[in-house]
Image (cartoon, rainbow, N blue to C red; front, top):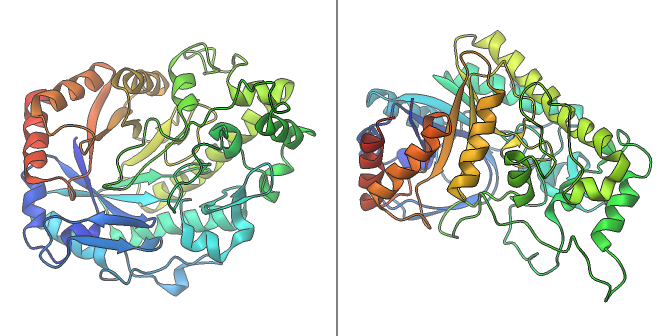
Length: 423
């Protein structure tokens, strides 16, 4: 199955949108049901060309009785039931609709509830990042999934941000490059829900590693890794993760889990392992279990409500991963599809997909989340070759990002690439 990603505002109010997406030759559309703030270009829409989305929102009707302490915002820039309207148009065009559900990345709720957000080792809050160590956050995520399945009735469920967000992938213009912070170290959460789970001395070690040695003595960790696999141009939504996650996920030299059968073995390298020293294994276990417990809770709820609806996880096999592609170093047998990010170097991305394939059980599939926007060229042959590379690495699904923004030339290249790659 191949999917194209789109937003409700790409489709609602544009009577030609659904057929345009169907012409790509995909089987389904990943339609945002819950999404964070953004500034979106809508080149085809008859009513607007640029849409400002000032805060995170839920694109189905917000039923007060369905929520607990955390209640998502409804959009004012499109219809409050925009997901349902877009879904119906896509279904009428012969496409399946998978509900693309962003979980812990929510600046609206983070700003309203600062006691529930990720905090770094210095206590600085990340208001775009709800921390799943808090019961209120896990409860919100479960209610979100239940509402998407109950009201949205999707053909599939896609979970993004199923774990803690980190230093990158924020909500405002980035002004941190040049500070030489290591993004891995700045991503480790020390909110009250997380800090007490760590061994004594964890915070001090991380702070010391971030501050580094006295001026003039050099600092081996003084690098900023906020612009690798997800980083793209400013013309659309930017997904950013840290580069060390990708390296460790794909080689045996940077602290990755080794192949199946020896998953408990880690090497001690990379900024976090170096900073934490003998505490690394225990802290890593805390972080992995936090994501795993949220994932299990959400999948259990989804299976109870809609046992036949396939579940897709945006996942990263690296154990220290934060952000939209949550850490999944030991796999998740309860999911149907594990999707890896493919926005960066093709060889690194392919290695990540191969590792996800090693973590799959019988019947599970690997998907490649492929950037089809700038800086990629609108070149069908080049994109097809990229898709073949990912297929050789084990991907049997292509997730194209994103069809609402792509120019006519780029849409034609996407359609032709899918045909040529024959996936």
